[in-house]
Image: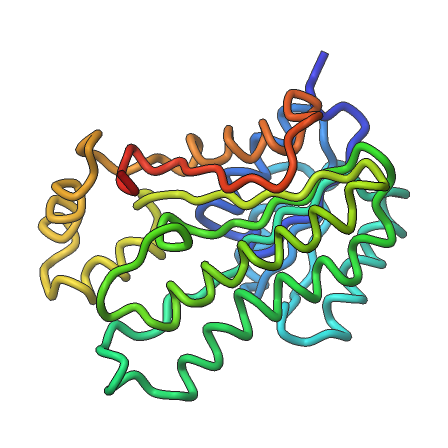
Length: 252
């Protein structure tokens, strides 16, 4: 029996990387999925790949409340219910010391990660029934930090606070809320971060990051997707309010 048979999932940042890998896996496990993202062509391609019967999509900026409301309503109108929310949309921001970090970039990073997750939870929670699951995709730097990433690390830590409040508020309804904390993952998003951070070409930059990971490699998007599936399914039926690292030991 597929683990998400007859379930409906809403994924932000769903057109590429971890979001798309998660959509593929959830569809394989029986779910119908709404992909919310900014890249129309990629969203259309993902829906074609995964099948129009299983996937719907919308161009959605998670920092715009009316767009979040419309995307969630579209999901329920199309599929009749909502069981899983994967708040995954994100941007990297700059890599600069705090004294040089642009205030507008800092604000935008928090808007996408924190305000975006807040709006998805605010307007998604009323649709969710008992036994539903919310997963916020944070980062290993939501548990640790490093120099130069004030915007990203602050936003990822703030998502944990949001998750803990939501987990307590939703528990009486039997809804689970957790954060996921991937380490470096083999995606275009991560490659751009690594090249900016190191000033090295992609392959060399990846090697430098591998050296910081006890398991000495990047995660694949599919490995992160399997962790999302665990939190989305009944396999985690008594798991709420946790920060789940999937980082190859990087936080140690």
